[in-house]
Picture 1 (cartoon, rainbow, N blue to C red):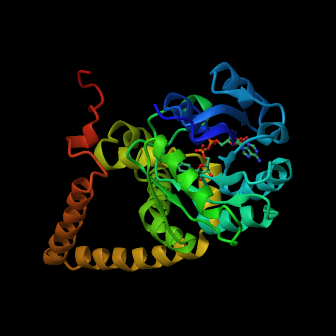
Picture 2: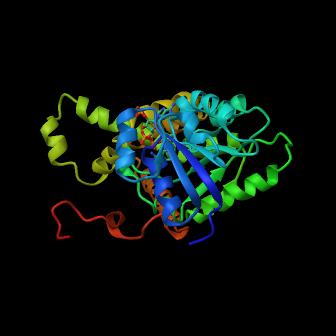
Picture 3: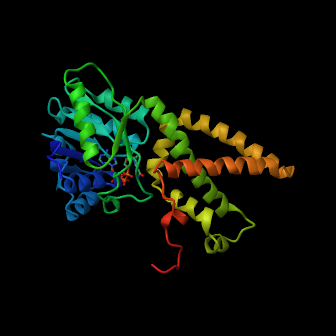
Length: 311
Ligand code: NAP
């Protein structure tokens, strides 16, 4: 338990990420008071029932007096949320977000900025396929990267604001790194956005195939397909916004992916086993590098029990 980094924070959007921040900030003592607001009345009621913090009736009353305002809404809603928040924020407070596309976050938050507050977009590389206030948990950010993409306007206190936001995320257990927003969006396009697009597509293809009985797809969905269905269960609004706002980087990755897929298709068609072995061996070594970097579990099946196995 540390001294609170911020006496008061405001969380806008009480879903998976917002509610996890509230839980972690309280559990690890990173914030004194925690105010929350969500656009949906039912979500506000549920958040209050879960004891996530002081649930405010309006966005303006949540952000009033906060030292740090965290926008935890879909990327497409950042502009409206920031525009509503900034006039109600106190001088010198920090405006940040958790959106998955940082170019758009920088644009939306900067457009709302009025020079009195510090704009520091951010993205936790942590999450699940679930949504809503019940889905959050306090350890979500432990050991995960949190990427900050600061927007500098040379305002006094800028370096101190960045240091405080860094300390806040470290108190939640994250490893914090700063980088350029465009670089973030290129890296995440291949490590997160394209895999989600592929998952949505493979699940759709399997269910559309006329030659495969849908019941069989569900019945025999062991291994690879089942893992794709987990990713494809992610929130449609969140992912629509990611693809609409990281369009160029995703299309660039998709072009290269399609070329590589065509090369595998050709190898299969021509019985070129050497190419298949070469590509599959290379992929296996990348999996090993991810495990060696502590980014995933070495355990079989991600350490997850097979359905029907003993607990
Ligand atoms: P979520 O569980 O769906 O929660 C988002 C909440 O914000 C919803 O209750 C939503 O209401 C509400 N909301 C939407 N517009 C709002 C507004 N203008 N003002 C106040 N509340 C508003 O989503 P999430 O998974 O926490 O994602 C939130 C953000 O985190 C997204 O930007 C996403 O890119 C980012 N992120 C997600 C993950 C992940 O794995 N899920 C990981 C890292 C970052 P409605 O449902 O009615 O829209």
